[in-house]
Image 1: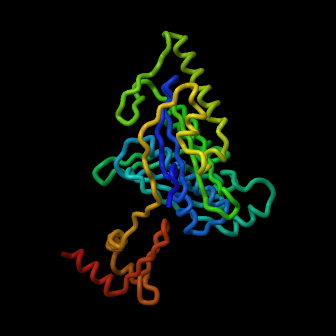
Image 2 (image 1 turned 120 degrees about the vertical axis):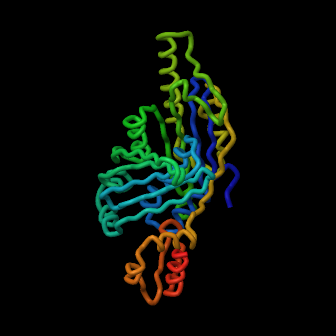
Image 3 (image 1 turned 30 degrees about the vertical axis):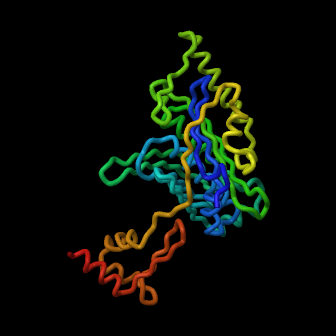
Amino acid sequence: MSLPGDDLVRPFQIDASALRGRLARLGTTVDEIVGRHDYPEPVAQMLGEAITLAVLLAGALKYEGVFTLQTKGNGPIRLMVADVTSAGAVRGYAQYDAEALARLEAGPGPVNAVPRLLGAGYLAFTVDQGEHTERYQGIVDLDGANLAECVHHYFRQSEQIETGVLVAVQRVTPAGPWRAGGLMIQRLPPSSLEIEGEETPHRLGFGGELALEADEDGWRRALLLMSSCKPGELVDPKLPPDTLLFRLFHEDGVRVFPVHPIAAQCRCSRERIEGVLQSIPREELTDLFVDGEVSVTCEFCGARYGFDEADIDALFEHSLH
């Protein structure tokens, strides 16, 4: 059960400089996702970061569908996927090489850095709004010490939007549940500044170069204030999100907007699996039978779906009608 102030995204605006942002706080959501697979600590923490970033980035978009963050590299963690629906359903999983991870943990230096855990590869963002809409995808190299720095790199290179991101994933106690928090601010062009459908005109100052200088000073100040936030504050269940935002930005005026609740929820179902199996030629499915059935396990939630020969025959008979 979520604590008050957990499992939500709080949009906000810093009035003095008209910067917009999102604060994410994840309790049960992140613990349920990383806990159901019993991942080693470095994998659980890195997946928690990916989930938190997916929630933050999805909260900054207007879409109806699924936002997906994916990493693929040649390090011990080969693949991570985290996705968020526009309704707030979150899921994620990681694929890793246990032997490579053990060698890394036995060696010198920090284990949780992106270059060591993920290796060389890419970070991809995808927005899928259904079969009748164009799919958007952005890809950038895994360039940074952590995933937040990789996101910075993406926005600098691909979107040319100045963005500041902080992410923390921790256990409050050594054997306690996982918690996560994230903070993101963005400096957008004046025409793009809109939150929750409400126009928010950019404060330009007195004009010309003075306006640009004031704008730049406001951005640097916001980044400095954000950087003063400690990882423990981002995940602290006793520190409400609004109290944290006020503590950081109250001198410049911080305005909050309605929260978006989120929850761990997989979208797998027997009907979805049946659709996948129907797309495979019937003769190829014969090779997939083990002990009299075709077994499919969801990588996200671990749910197992079994289909015997009669089930498979019924699927293909139904598809002919």
